[in-house]
Amino acid sequence: MNPILVEVPMQIDEVGRVHLVESVPLLRPEERVVELMLDGWRNQQLSRNLQFSTIDRRVRCVQRFIEHSNEEPWNWSPVMVEEFSADLRSVRHVTHATLRGYHSSLRAFCSYICNPDYGWDRVCEQLFDAYPAQVFSAWNTASHVQEYDGRASKRPYTKDELQALFEYADDEVARIGATSKKGWQAAYRDATMMKVAYAYGLRFNELTHLQLVDFARNPHAREFGKFGVCKVRYGKAFRGSPPKPRSVLTVWRWTPPIIEDWIANGRGDPDSLDLFSSERGGLVVGSTLLRRVRRYCVDLGIPDGVDLHSFRRSYATHLLEDGWDPRFVQDQMGHEHASTTGIYQFTSDEFRRSTLRSVLDRTVREALDSTTKGTAE
Image (cartoon, rainbow, N blue to C red; front, side, top):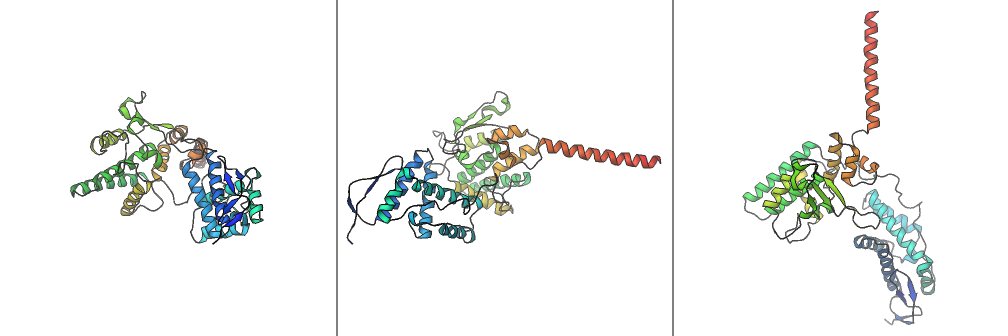
């Protein structure tokens, strides 16, 4: 196949702009332009300080849409958007949040290639006699209309379920250890990770990055010793910012002994600072712990609605049920808004609680007064 001569070859700068340079032979210009579009979009997102994992996920989303539509971006149409969305919902059965994430990524890519500041409109006109267009709009994409749109089956563990799960995990450690088989330390590690995730209300990424230096004494709660405070350094990032740190205070007396026992008897390499590590010495992969939690839940008959993140849900819910101040729980969870913590709050807030109590008390008084008055007559 002879190369197709293109009069306008391109270069991408560090912020994603395309520049036309000298004429050189170019083979398969459509594939090359798509490749450069994605490279330019990567650069543009890097300049916004987005995480590499976020950028890679968005790029894969665009590649998936190209594969589904079998068309290059300058030939996309709203009909293709609707067909893609229908496939995701009816065939692949993705969640609301996943569908919205796809739409958000694809809309951002279209905004990039449509922006005349980046020059792709001129490139597509000269090469393909076409123009890229924004085909993802408010009327054909999923909108974010409420703060929580997770599956309704997701819920916290009950206290009885947690107790049964932790006891079962400990029994598995003893069972594997008694057989002299490999896996004793991994089972012990995962059992401890479950308990620490619940003890501090941690997300998995926060949990797996914990190190020994992340624990400190709390001068206002000396009974917890050197494990009075847990410093979370890899909190959930917000819109391209670095991980958000926070300090979580220890609230339960059973927490320090669990960590101390793991450090003394199961952690392994004494020269490592990592609190938890994989068998190969790196960070624990989420799927590893998730599979064990799911297997234990199946063995115990705990439904699918509870999972690894349910330890965090349970932490907030149980503190609120036990009467801890909602503002304290909000700070412990690292939530910017109280409404986010309210997602986990199955108990009523102070206003509703006081209103309900006053109405119930008034109803009882009125009933007693009515009974007394009827007896007197």
